[in-house]
Length: 84
Image (cartoon, rainbow, N blue to C red; front, top):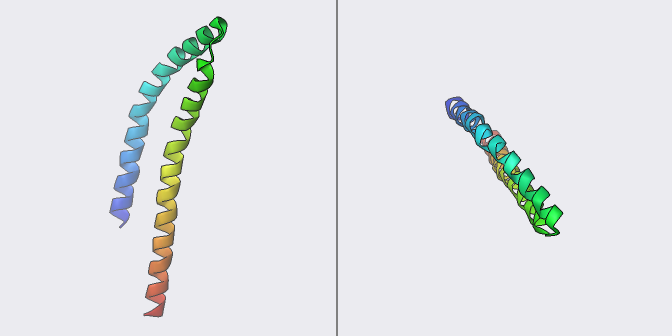
């Protein structure tokens, strides 16, 4: 069980390390688009902000759901082991 957990952590760490390069490259593009949009009087900057928040929340929600599932499963397993 420990080996699987360590492997998952290692894969996630590698993914995060490689992902930062791509995400930092997009920041300047998003900022320029939002500034230009606001100067021209368009409302697409508000949509851009919603998209950014969506991209921010989804990974945390998935990891939180996985953590909750893992917690409840391990709690049930401990109760079954204590009853036996």
